[in-house]
Amino acid sequence: MEKSIVSVSFVCLGNICRSPLAQGIFEDLLEREGLVEKVMVSSAGVGHWHVGAEPDARMQKTANDRGISLQSRAQQIQSSDFRGLDLILAMDQSNMDALLHTAPSDSAREKLKMFRSFDPEADGDLDVPDPYYGGDKGFDLVFNIVHRTCPKVLEYLREQHNI
Ligand code: 4NP
Image (tube, rainbow, N blue to C red; front, side):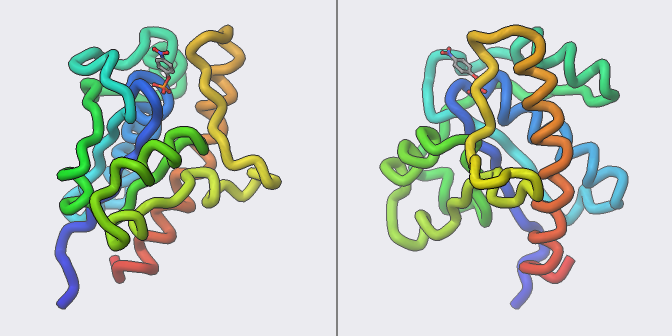
């Protein structure tokens, strides 16, 4: 039987820059497409350092300037979270390595994909660069990558889950 709600989560290191942006952009897309009731979006970090924090002020500004508001609060992914998720997207390879380690089973590991495997301009580079220790240009670059890739993720979900 077709599941009525599909659940996707974006995962980075701290859950204050890249994955909250992906969540915000994806939520905006779902609203535009009238799919808010069909797809659940979340984000998380593989690290615990920022749990409870709002997105990094630099990421919020970059997003706000482009019409996207970020509402998430940082959380750390737990192995028990895998059960409720259909698709888990790692923002870089080190996040993927941590997720492979955290996943409780082979079927959980099958839910993992690299976010940029959906990026039409990835050109072999599957990491969304970590902007945390860099300047504003890093945040713009992250925005552009995530903004062009999210619609491709949605296309994939539509095909996979008939929505
Ligand atoms: P994010 O960025 O993984 O995109 O949220 C980072 C946030 C915090 C740190 C590193 C990356 N940190 O080292 O605290």
